[in-house]
Image (cartoon, rainbow, N blue to C red; front, side, top):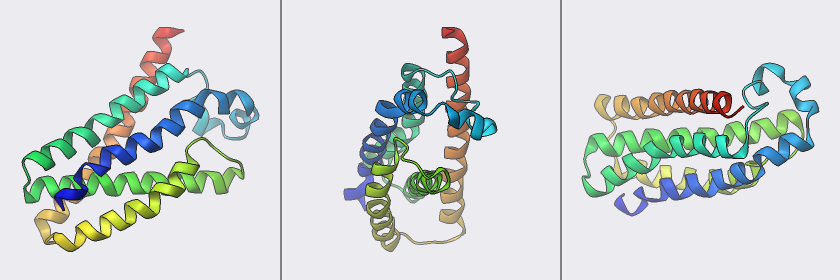
Length: 167
């Protein structure tokens, strides 16, 4: 399983570079989306690429941090947390693919989502074969997923705060 640990931050970076590079361009080219999805897109309306990149950087910290800890100090708990975080990344890819299907338009993140989702599923499947699933590991996997949802919220709060300061 150790062979796969550092693929988590690599896959995250690969995916999020597409998002960062295309973020501002996409919303400039498609301003009608703000009217079509006002509740969802209100958070992105005035964000610059730099502010979005800062949010991505903040989101990257647990991907990288937990992966390094798991790689250098392998334990059942860290493997389970890592697995939960990886599971949340795979879910993130599914959300992006769903967004494209919903708005029926390319969004800057879908190409890498389509590439990374099958790879992530394969890695999760392989790593699951090395894990012993019991109440403790399942609990830490769930904690990893919940932690990433909380981190996603923190990243958006950070982007909102930075976006306000830059205005």
